[in-house]
Image (cartoon, rainbow over all chains, first blue to last red; front, top):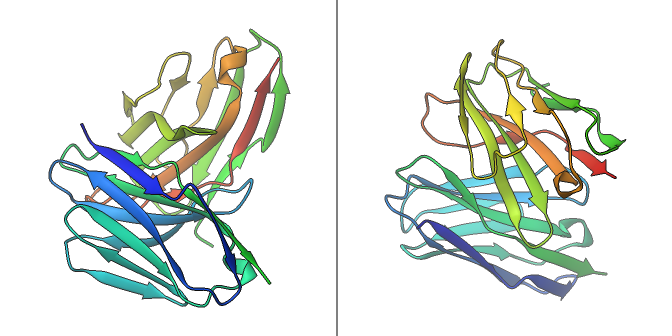
Length: 109
Length: 114
């Protein structure tokens, strides 16, 4: 059964304190792994798609990496405006999109 | 501006009173989907549509109906809402023919059923 587990559930960082969020997955025939950012009361906002192990993508202070079993979202020198819930999702050969429950990130000045 | 819109954004209703949540996208996407989001459970798919007149059940379809008569619109219908349908609902769309579900989400509809 396709499954996505995100850790930690919540993360508190001081501004400038770099860290990583983890997304572990089990899927038959990975077609894509997606990262989204969700602000409170709003819809998820698409960040990245990763297609195969070894791939990396960057956007401002965020960098997403992918292995055969997990993906990491690295946050370098975070700012308070990076505070949000980060969601990971996978699409396998069934085409179905499976979401994790997210990591709630809080960055304090 | 490319976007997915939903209406209403907030809705409080009573058990059994039929309601419809509208969803519209302006990106000419073939694939549209409805999700509900509940604390600790993440996003769960209710129904999806791969194109006009083509709809199928997701993981939690009970108590919901959808229709896809036009490419841009995908309304969610609750014929007889119950309190366990109190949730945050999201509509999403993506291009079907790329085969990759880079979905774009609407702003959400917070539904309370009393």
